[in-house]
Length: 125
Image (cartoon, rainbow, N blue to C red; front, side):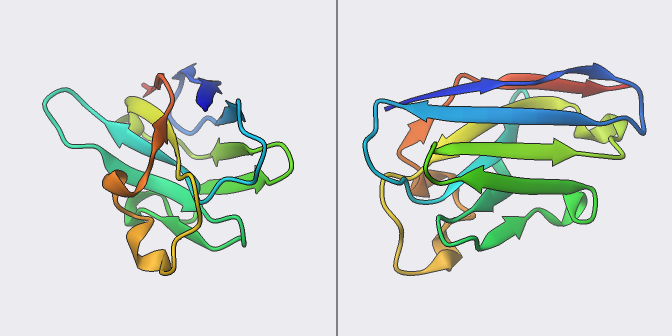
């Protein structure tokens, strides 16, 4: 399974971006798919994630500004980022779990995920 992320870039504060992530090499619906962020010397932390059943979790810092969505048939996930702030600047990584989990409490943790994309950088100035 490979995850291909795209859509990062440079925008002014207050602007919007949409990140996309497509999973290939998989013939079934993946478990939770989401986005994590990581800066230099920092741990990877959740931005937003969504299960195949539609349960979503967001970091408190992005609630009300970012929206995650997915297409199960295409194993594709999007992150719509609005009202971007300079502090949103980071590397953003797409992630996917191979199978659904029994509990949604684990989907906020990076070690729940089996597959990772190459990362896309989002900068807000």
